Length: 66
Image (tube, rainbow, N blue to C red; front, side, top):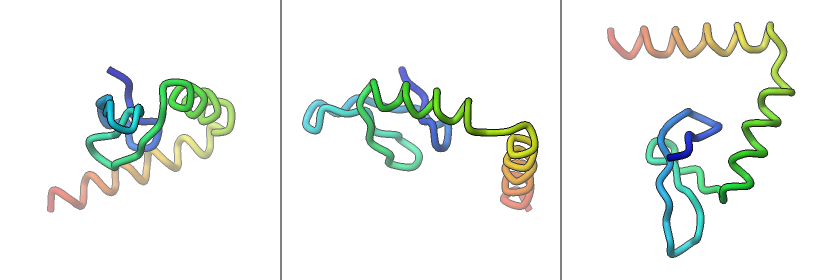
């Protein structure tokens, strides 16, 4: 099962629209688009951007628990 490139949620195939739909954020992509997004994200994100994104994700998670 593919993973969403936006939120890393699980994606499920919807035969009506012929795309995979993220169960968490609702993003709909075909298989090629999913692969392209993951590839582009990998090349576009610098180490500093990655650390900042991970820091923000942690803060979001931490404050949801409170």
